[in-house]
Amino acid sequence: MRVYSSHKELLKSIKHKLSVGLVPTMGSLHEGHLSLIEKAYSENDEVIVSIYVNPTQFNDKEDLKKYPRNIKEDLKKLNRFENVIVYTPENNDLYQKNESSKQYDFGSFTNLMEGKHRPGHFDGVATIIEKLFKIFNPDNAYFGEKDFQQLLLIKTLTEQLDINTNVVGCDTIREPDGLAMSSRNKLMSDKERKSAKEIIKLLLWAKEVYSKFDFVQIRDEIKNRSKLIDSFKLEYFEIMNLEEFSSISKKNNEIRAFIACRIGNIRLIDNIKL
Ligand code: PAF
Image 1 (cartoon, protein in one colour):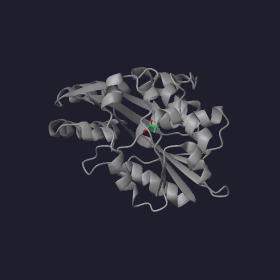
Image 2 (cartoon, protein in one colour; image 1 turned 45 degrees about the vertical axis):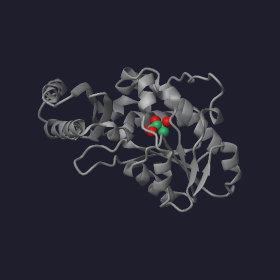
Image 3 (cartoon, rainbow, N blue to C red; image 1 turned 90 degrees about the vertical axis):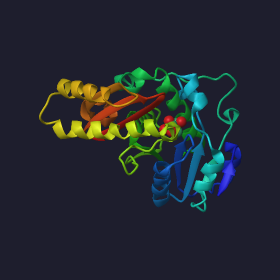
């Protein structure tokens, strides 16, 4: 394992002819991240894992403060990948002093769901991903489908800016009870964690009845069911036809259900194909 906090030093250590896979993360690595790294290894000569809690994508300062950070544990987990290159920058390796997000226009899909509920979040994600892609020029970059809108956003970013990186979406990895893996999961109390396992049940119920009921009926019932779950506050539930959702997904005839909720103070999202 080679660990660098300076991107310039890291770049010096990569041989030109090798293909590079990038796995951008905010640390607190879990099996979901490790599966992205495994996929990256199966498709590239070199794999770079970036660990950086990007401040510009947090619209809520408290959320940024309490976002879990544990670099020692992360490096331990990465030990299983012998040759992995780890990038652990400080802010000044990526941002100028007082630099804020760039403003992008990726189309109306970025104003829905996460875009609507977390103003500025997507500009922050696009800003850091544009920087990482321009610095490392990876052949492939890997992202989980749990953050499905983020995945579409990054695909749109590379298309708009003519960036040559292939953006690879990977299946959501779940806990045995179905909860999508997320670094935020470890912030929950045992009681909250129990409530969190209901998220996938709501989505699976929607999948089961999708062909029988219309969207409003399904959403109303999801609202009713979510009121019965302890400490659970539904933020949104949506069903989207990807063909109509964004220009980048227009060749995809999938329909997906999306959910965001707060369990206590922890915000969680998930989605499944219907
Ligand atoms: O999904 C995440 O962990 C982050 O949004 C990402 C893609 C690493 C950008 O900071």
